[in-house]
Image 1 (cartoon, rainbow, N blue to C red):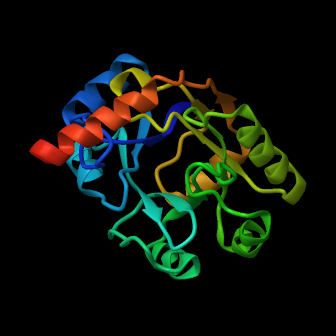
Image 2 (cartoon, rainbow, N blue to C red):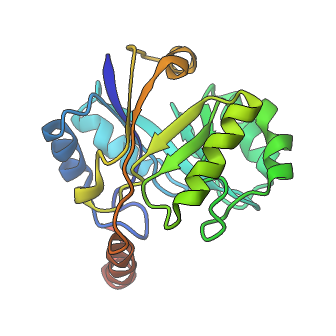
Amino acid sequence: MLKVEFHCHTWFSSDSRIAPAALVVNARKKGIDRLVVTDHNTILGAKAAQVLDPEMVIIGEEVLTQRGELLAAFVQEEVPPHLPPLEAVKRLKQQGAFISVSHPFDWQRSGWSKAELLDLLPHLDAIEVFNSRSLHRGVNEHAARFAREYGAAGTVGSDAHLLWEVGRSTMTMPEFSSADELREAIRVSMIQAELSPLWVHFGSTFARLINGIVGGK
């Protein structure tokens, strides 16, 4: 069985100051077996981390569409932001990526409407049913209910922008080495999920400020 962190960031995201090397070391210390690095609209951080630990690190991306955000794993080519949702999904599907949706009902962070999600659902592999950074527990509960009602698989993630957050929410599942195997494994996964405190958002604000001055790395 593998312990999987499905949603985390490096300093290639404007709101994080985590170096890829520090992320890898921290994940190892916390017993994480697979780490999906999902920087905003780039795969550069994931690539840098994967060089350091090719077995543990999976290249992912959090893609901002014209509506909400997609959360992809096993990404081979970067997908640019601000595309129509179905166009972004199409580009991810063409490379065989596993496609989830970030914090789907979190209105404070590019949330989707139920109608939009229902239109998108046939093209998705999962939706994120728990995000540790959601300020309101209700948005996670809403996502979990939606997944149960419509038979969607669920991902959970720490959405870590600070090293301390890594491993807050993980999934334990059978071994997998591809997007197709992940689609099967996630259906029998066990979830450990915990909300992060409010102050982590101030950490992201600070990171955004520093990155604006010195650059992301």
